[in-house]
Image (cartoon, rainbow, N blue to C red):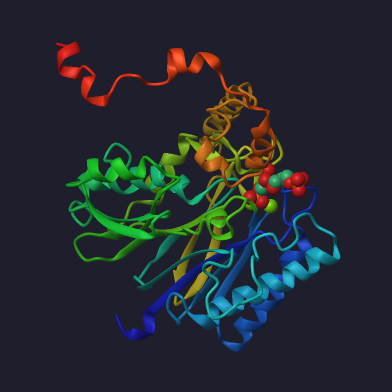
Length: 392
Ligand code: 13P
Ligand code: 13P
Ligand code: MG
Ligand code: MG
């Protein structure tokens, strides 16, 4: 295992504009980004690349030997997005340049709008990976499936029967509001882990390591666009990379949680809960109520740094039932219209245009006379009966 076999996978994505609303990337913008990466491959900056899209998000999948957070690679992605955004502007595409929040690129695209998932490792003799890409949702959407893949033996048989995985995995969880992170061990600290990641808008799984040797197993893009911009610009449609087989979960174990289309935040105007529907690249476009949120899984072999593939892993009738269930959930949730819990709660709505509407209503409010009488608390906290006394 020499130094020459260290390879970095960088998946960097941005919404640079879309045809007919937030529906789908235009092929000319894909071509513009492809030209930039093809030139970089010719020059040897990157070893290999694959450009694709999921809904209105342009996806750059690259391999190279420059490590994570390389200014050269981030600069290359930025250039590809800029060129694609120029084409989007020429074509008058909708929200052209949406995720390019600033012109001030200085060595790293993090914090500027694009989403980034990168991992570096020593290539195994056979190195299968799965790249997940979602549209109309947020990074916390990966919390539930990653928990199931790396911590739930009812999902991943290998946790029980493969000695290389039997010690479990370490989860690095980021608090996106406070900018702090914690590393928790599974299975010992499962309940602590769930106490955090059950709040996916705030606590986001960022990386997962195999406990016995600290090998990187998974990484998620954790950028929260609206937190960065301080206003609604679009959802932080996330990506993730997961290593598979030979001491990591099998590809089938990695795909299995997506047979349950769990509810994620996003969908119309980034403001609604909806089911995450696993789809093929062909169906990676969000139509109904700008959704429902979708996820694509591409499988590659990484061989001497080259990307062999992809295979379109959800392009399989085995996921038809999940898609059908997602449609039913979509129907059910839609019937709530503008009511919670279809619409997101007030904390998340802060980053949308709803506060402008509420502001307008502010001086329409009059004092409620009955409030003093019935609702305003008269009892001091010390006078309250305690739970023990009333519920014995
Ligand atoms: P517009 O008001 O620009 O149509 O935006 C709505 C929307 O799609 C939010 O991203
Ligand atoms: P995107 O985040 O995919 O641009 O979607 C924005 C939106 O408002 C969809 O209704
Ligand atoms: Mg968009
Ligand atoms: Mg999108």
